[in-house]
Amino acid sequence: MGQGHPAELAARHDLDNALFEKNQLPESEDLFRAVLAGRSTVLAPEHPDTLVTRDRLIGTILLQERFAEAEALYRELLEDMVSAMGGEHPETLGTRIDLAYAVGMQGRAAEAAGICRDVVESGSRILGASDLRILDARDDLAMWVNDTGDHAQAERLCRELLETELHILGPDHLLTLSTKANLARSTAGLGNVDEAEQQLRAILTQLEQILPAHHYRTTHVRRLLSQTTTGRLA
Picture 1 (cartoon, rainbow, N blue to C red):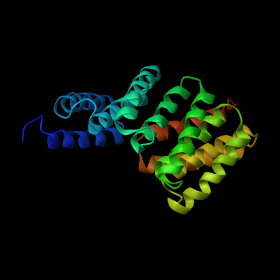
Picture 2: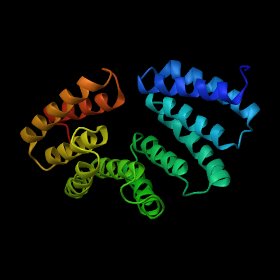
Picture 3: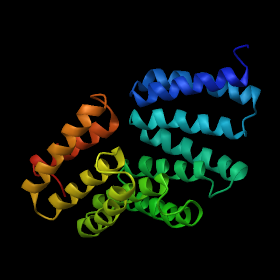
């Protein structure tokens, strides 16, 4: 089996996913670029597997905080995904959520919230309201609504989502913990800083026990905690 064989490319893709989950982002980016070159040649640029690899590659760029670069690449990818797989394909919906993150991290929270809201509305019809991608989109929606300063609406969104997550995923799932952190952020924004700090410290302790120290989820909660304790949370 040669280096360009589809099965070998799939194995390298899986290895790269493992590096991605370990937050080894520069190494992951290099490997995804190599796999993308192989899949573009062997499978064709518009093949779904090639498009998925492009998405994963851009994800490594996003998590290295190259947000403008990631946004441009996501917009190009989405055009190809819609053409090849359709606008409501699960992979397309996931890429739209990631685009929202790239947009929001450049200070355009309202635009990011709008993208997530559209994903929730259209994706719920196709995938069902309990699909993990839809729950993820709802979590990000609450995060961006918080960023717009509407902490009361964000609090409501978080509480509604938590009820579903606790039932489906349990209290210790990473997405549940993310929503708890977003809820704590809302709590701080509404003036209950001490309560929010206590909640964030508890969430951070859980994350540090199960994730690498510099994992993006852990880093995000640390940032929220720092903002809360220094009184800089809007």
